[in-house]
Image (cartoon, rainbow, N blue to C red; front, side):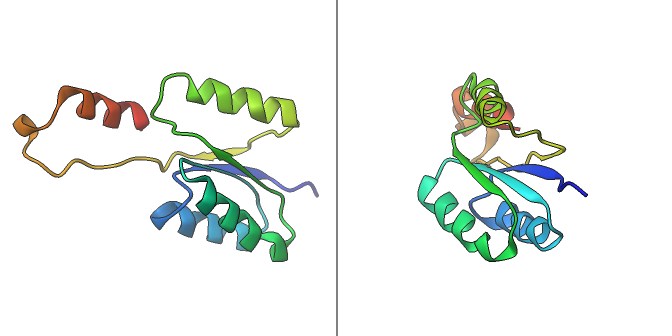
Length: 111
């Protein structure tokens, strides 16, 4: 049986890291996406003992065109994604009228 592949955004910490742990233990191959390459390298290295294929992509999914770049990179590597866990995101902690419109739209674009 061929392994299924899950792509997890926001995988470098918090809920994303926990989801990566759970999918790893269930035998899924992983594509981990986050901004922090150092954290992704460590996370991928930790998965070596589980014998799952782990690919990491250090990109900020909030930036325009990143989804297309990730898609092209995976296509070039011959990786097919079976499941997407779109976990990337961030919050703003001020009163709505005190935030900048650019921050609000960036938050929406990330999800």
